[in-house]
Length: 407
Ligand code: FEO
Image 1 (cartoon, rainbow, N blue to C red):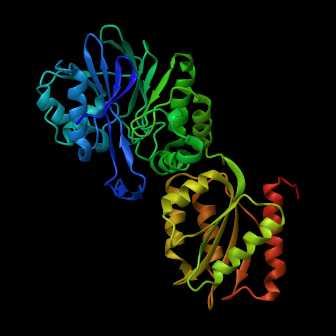
Image 2 (image 1 turned 90 degrees about the vertical axis):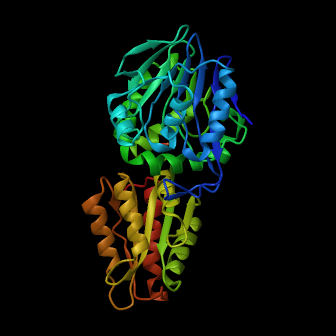
Image 3 (image 1 turned 180 degrees about the vertical axis):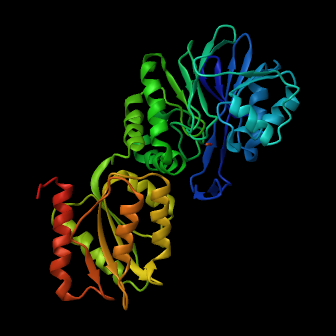
């Protein structure tokens, strides 16, 4: 049975939701599912913008067939060649053998690489600024390399203002009947998952996203719909989501507050983290969050790290090194290019207290614009009474930094 939504009178969402996949890219948990979005335009010619993941191919094909109402499919525009969007290209070719494919040079190279049999199709290679008319609608193509793969482009329909934005402005969470961002409480229910999607999938490529945002700014008055490949379509409140993207892609925190991430084997480092959190609240710093690195998925920690201005790393020493799960988190931060944060360190160790120096070195050697506070607290097994004044100094230094108090 088909399940489609209208974006406009002649543009239809023909995507599908996936609630069976546990791990997006086989790494990021998606407990609320994800949507794979594709769109069909009914003009003098018929046009499909992108396809979907193999897992929802059947639903997608039924949707396309329903919207076409017996018409042939004339064009397929591929904005992004990652398999969660392009897996059904060959199924489309089998059903609509005369379909012409519009995409970038790199994208056609990837189609061959993935083993799609496209050589019998008419392939229309486009590049930055090219335009194409489907009858009433004229579109232009904008290259978007590394948002999130090198072949990516976005397509702007100059007639109805629909921007097919590929991975940009996407989000985890199944749409489940909703289509537009204004049909959900985005800020309450979706923002955290949109941030987790962006930061973990595209976060590394902030400068490339900035480049795309710069191009979008020159045609902002022409954009009436933002149609991403995951998550809801935007038709209003562009300023809201653009502001989020501006923060995320420049690695500027959204919030002044403190994220405390601890690695604790027997609860003693955890107790120190809790002590610090309480002291921060006593000082009026209530915008804090505290996570056990061992029981929180790293994609969630990354998302929160992009959100907050200040970070506390509290880690036990393990095999004379950084606790492995904490090290994973640090490596992910490095891989995703996270920068511009103020960091406090609590270290612990029963017979060799090494984790503080090692975490500081990791930050100094691998990450940009990370300010590490001098007030490190060093623990030998537990937080004893005689360390209370050091914890207090650390809490005060953090509070002063959050409040912008000059020293
Ligand atoms: Fe949703 Fe980069 O693919």
